[in-house]
Image 1 (cartoon, rainbow, N blue to C red):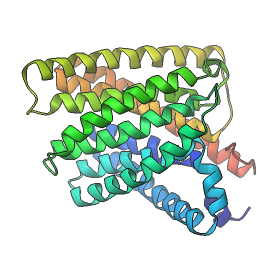
Image 2: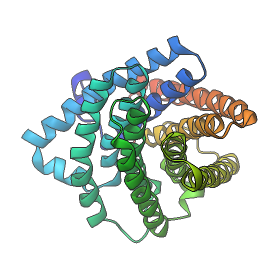
Image 3: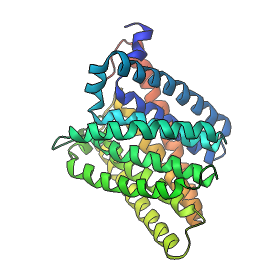
Length: 313
């Protein structure tokens, strides 16, 4: 396979790389590792552009393949990756670019979501939770822009998407094949990542100064409850990984790194909003672990590529 074909034939799951790298960039920014954060952002941005070109090329000139791939949950990584990248770009102050990414994600989201939901099976892998992740991604980016005073009206919209994301999580939960916890190739972690990004959304909603009194208190409780669920899910999946070690590179391992990073960022954000110092310390530890796993998966990918193995789609 030529180098050009290697990136023009990447499966939809490749979007998880942008999600994983982008959320690590956010976490590194929150913990004052700005140079590393910007490097991660640059890497995520370059891969996002390649994937966007590939997405558009298939839509315009290979429509049958685009339709086939748009039916699968990994297709929603296109939306999630765009919103994660937009969230980090917002933190740079590049609001116009972030708004543009939000518009792109919002236009693609309903098309892919409906297509995926129409083709759900009775028992699904962890990628099924991407219906929640993509929806909450829109909420996170919208609320981040609102908190940056780029568009205040986006905060009520973020609340609506947050509620819809929670509903979609419940729907995905009923379709999830729980044996994936023990035998999944990496995307089983999205079950935790979806709760983590919901927690991040809730923390940003809580931070909105215009919601006070009972509204603020209710959001604060919801944020803490979701963070507790996130950490419990994280612990269960980590124990399962230790008991049933699954070595070797699989592209779905980027769907492991993303929830690890998202859990760290959600913990950091929650700690700041509810003013609990030890949550910040925990978030830094979780971020260090997520970064280490990113490096491990990247090394495994490099070794796999050098040995001429085709990554699993």
